[in-house]
Length: 188
Image (cartoon, rainbow, N blue to C red; front, top):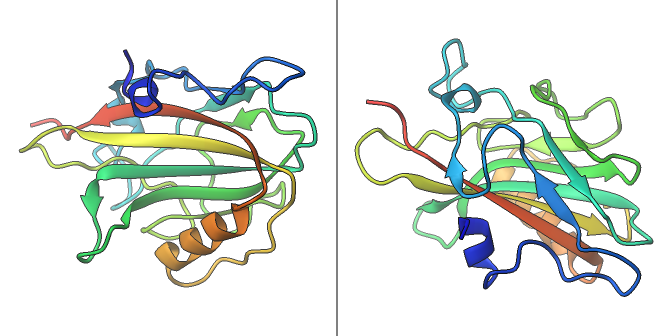
């Protein structure tokens, strides 16, 4: 069973809405629970430190009433500064309700052309997986949320503060969620 399904007690996506099928998330570059290709990591040839190329992803079956989407990618195996915060690899919020995914190689910058915002521990850019070559593979989760509002959250200089603000603003407004997991460790 894929790691994302295990995390949710075997469920592959959000609970089905009364009017339709469950929301799903797909990343064609690797299977759910599989190895994330080096191409999408910090170890990729030509990747700037702490960056990488974001994988293409698509979601389907958002619940009726969806006004925006949020993507939260995080490393479940890294704890930040003796807290319970894990690594903020990529948070994209206020993705338009008309979107059905994100393309490969989302460009760097705080605000995207569609009006959404992005942030990571590296800055306003996708932070690819970067688990060290020694030690276990890390678990990276991609979570997409369908919201009934557009969030009134501006990026701050601190990615972790921004992520906390986004996650707090989402509370009470989540219509659906889909999760996809991947594993990564740098090549030796």
